[in-house]
Amino acid sequence: MKDTDSNTEKAWADLEERCENCTKCPLYKTKINTVFGVGNKSADLMFIGEAPGESEDKQGEPFVGASGQLLDRYLRAVGLKRCEVYIGNILKCRPPHNRDPLPEEEDACINFLREQLTLIKPKILVCLGRVAAKRIISPDFRITAEHGKWFVKGEYEVCAVYHPSALLRDASKREDMLRDMMDIAEKYRETAR
Ligand code: URA
Image (tube, rainbow, N blue to C red; front, top):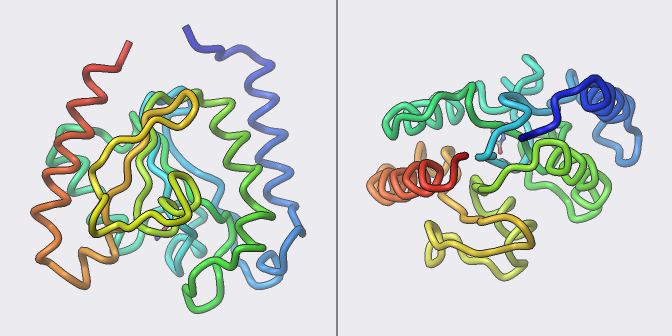
């Protein structure tokens, strides 16, 4: 049974406020909104992307732009609701022109994700794309060769799938993505309490 008491609520509010006011890297100077994360705060399944893009920065919510709409289609295709999972990112502020996060930006931001994981206690983590996979699974992770493979990292079962924006650029990857997402949904149903 997961903790949903008022202490947990306070811990979430405190975390969100610290994240909102963070100045540990320069990205706070150029962001419009902090993109903290969204979804079920006691989800067993959490998706982790790399960083907010333009639409996410404007709306303050992860994966709401074109790549988010494609992610939503995959979730629906495998019978998952966006509201039953949690969706977050490695970085909470948008890098200018959507460039890759810098290592020092990831280092500055990663504790917010760690704290989210501590509060949510998911069982399954899905890295959306290479950047999240390199940070969470292994620095030498190769997305083309290793997408869809399962790893155990501490208390989590973890895998990575193609980033939805890669699927927008290269439709030939979509079949693999559907297979990976079906496998993730199956593991989720096996694992769910
Ligand atoms: N790409 C990401 O990695 N995260 C988002 O929230 C949006 C696009």
